[in-house]
Picture 1 (cartoon, rainbow, N blue to C red):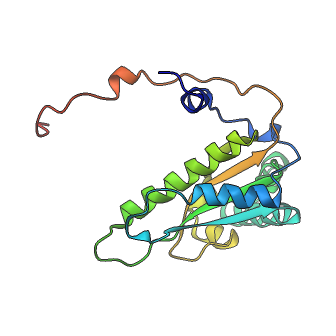
Picture 2 (cartoon, rainbow, N blue to C red; picture 1 turned 30 degrees about the horizontal axis):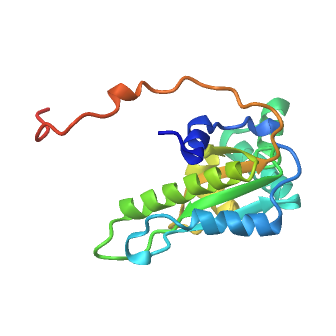
Length: 194
């Protein structure tokens, strides 16, 4: 039952963000990544997601805005905490925000559109890994903060699916414990009995 695709997926790991370095994907590679990310189940062809590229100086600008917002929310930040906020988007050379953009449709629930966005994010991660880049998918506090989302370029009705940090990764990603899959599935045995 071996195949190169299955073998690749069984070895996929997240790289530590601070170890993602230049070079980042080129413009042509980014276009290919978005093309792959868009090839997901999408009931009604709603395209209920979009992508925001954070690269170059924009990463530092976002960091300054997030540090200021954190200070506004929490009061004066320690130097360590301020530095952490300043570098949220500049640790990797490219961050792609995957954004849920639900559309009004009486037949297609928002939940399906959100799931489609999650599939788009995972396709993006897998495609970047297949190109040889390291990735790490995170959200963080600003993804759940109305003003944080606005600063990051989201409209009021949009939500963050994830920020995919991408860059060259020359090490081996640390393996983490994986679930016992025997506990994750079972044959159908009838309605839930509680």
